[in-house]
Length: 493
Image 1 (cartoon, one colour):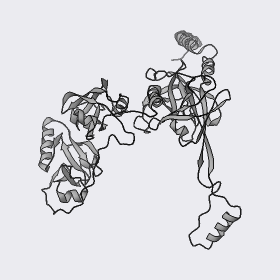
Image 2 (cartoon, one colour):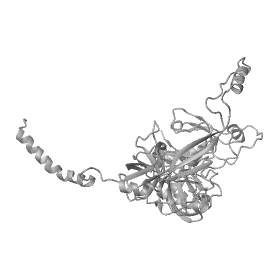
Image 3 (tube, one colour):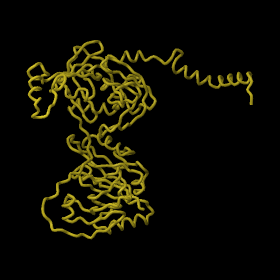
Image 4 (cartoon, helix red, strand yellow):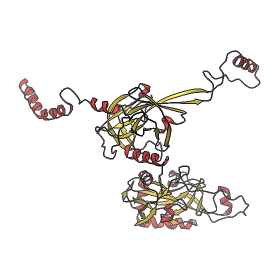
């Protein structure tokens, strides 16, 4: 069909009429001359954002290191003589410095928040303020390596401009944010962007729950604040993903709700006091979910309970799926450690679990996490070094695995602790489902379908029971040679 000039004009008019409300809305949002200026906000906040300069002494050579030559080489004496006696590079201590960012949260007391990695190992810390004044840090009041935060104390001659924390929980994906910091040591710099995502896990620690932003964050921005449009701190800029070291629009900030709680503890105690449950957990994967009859990624599956821990005293068991903790839904495995860590020490909480298909609630008194300990690990003692007569236990092959009851000889052969009971895996068919799920020789099958195993026939019965129920996989509790316990759902072929 041919379009006349008149019809094209008519279509353009109609399109303009239809899109006029949209265009007017955009103009209203951005203003007639472009986006609304954030200059008043930046001006108000900049004085509370500081540059942090650190210095420390590093042992080692200055300049080019001494060339290495083979011992006994005819050139060995020449090099030693040349570099040590003829103006070569001396080996001595040297000062190195670095720059980062921070912000004042209490102008009267002189309290400054930054990243721990900004001041880690520093012998001297200088705070540079926006007006050009400098103050030496009197004391590092506390630091938290897991959340990468530190609280510094200076003595101001007059009250300093400060900023307050806002709620990172209220911020939404798409909301505007502003980053102020010290990128590449250039001094105070402002960048704008939006919240790109929440609850990001970048595998930097056990409590990852970052805000992601596309506001330009570069080297030197670490420790600086991320503001909402009210001028409240909703995050501490901590990390970036970049192949070049510069911003590519993927920056991460510790949420203010986490920061505020940790900083308050550092202020009061000089250390972080986190709640401790005492369980090792794993994700409820699709195949495990099918064996338990729950939706995928629902709750946190307990694979082991630390002896004499709050969890053990409260009656939690391996195989329980934690569905709720202190009234909060546990939607993912990695969400539980954060909830537990933020629970007050000594508080008794209700923990709702799914145990063998039945909902059950137990009460647990939260303990304090010892930072030097591994809270989710179960200690494994070395096997006793004693001779034992060889044994020939009855072996059988079940779902692609050659299994035998644990004897003294097998315990010695595979290094299995005397307290561990179950079936030792002596061979695995490389084409079996068990092999694809990572079960290997030397593993111990402790349970199947949450039933204890002591002989191969027990596993065969569990497999028959699972098949009769119509499920497609059997849930095995496996312990490896390192003492790590986990649940594995092995499909039935």
